[in-house]
Image 1 (cartoon, one colour):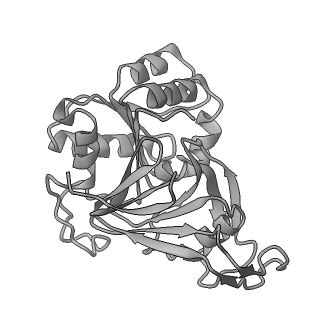
Image 2: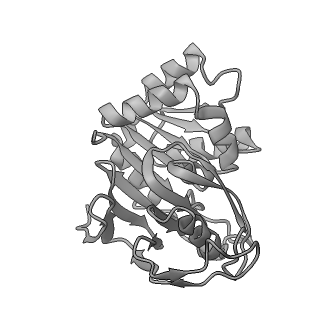
Length: 285
């Protein structure tokens, strides 16, 4: 098995991009922007302020606004070499897009709709080059919200935020498969997504499910050695040792019971090995 030389950084959304506006009702946590935030960590995994970053806004319905927001955010961190790409059916295989990717130290996928990402990028020359650089070079692929969800082998296309674990509340599709045998969900605690991620895992019991909270991420090296960054937690679910469940025989919207689903809670200072299926203690870098 080939061990990738690059790094993946899935982020749970709402990373502290800048100092919140005190009049913004959505900024309930009032996280102060600082030099140790998630985006700063993304930069440091590349080449610091000298990094050449490509922000990919394909998932967003407001790509121009989203692109400008991340240009400002990375500029605040001292990084001025930020290029924005909105990939679609016309330019995803263009020479210009491929040259832009070839010159970058890393990419950052914004939030939006993960289905747009997979539909536009999966079967493209851009994806081929992205995967080639990730496998063979010290190249960073970061993404937030939908941009994180698309990294996994299987992606949640649609899913209800039901409080109960009900059969049939999730629709799955293929992801980028940059992180094999995984399913990623984001905004995990704030949007009550435990049930939908659990169902996605029950449908793929050999996988690992990652529920990443907001302003939180994972730096994943060597194809599966994870360490946690940011202000929150990551819930990691394992289903390979389940003893009893009615998942397969349950009818649609019937409650599902499970015995033996394992959960780990990762925060800064903790990590996980996908290969060994083992919780890790990580020294701060």
